[in-house]
Image (cartoon, rainbow, N blue to C red; front, side, top):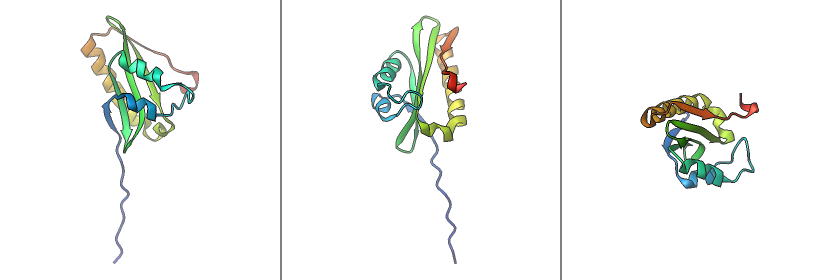
Length: 116
């Protein structure tokens, strides 16, 4: 009797941002960008990292510019394409929580032309 094999699907998960995460992600949009830039942004406000298995596939956060104003940022790897909808939903929930928790009345983000 033949056994049926079921594919093991690894679900993405969210973890608090760690400095080592930025060093492991090859930025899809700016492969030559120094990960120190991402670390500086993450140090200026709340941030998270999206993981699939043992690999970080993206990180995002909000720089608290001044009271009531935040600037959203995100760095993703090529691997994010397979998890775009999941990351969109997680990021929306994360931003909603950050807006509430910090009393933000304005949240800014810069989007590259290629990503619109």
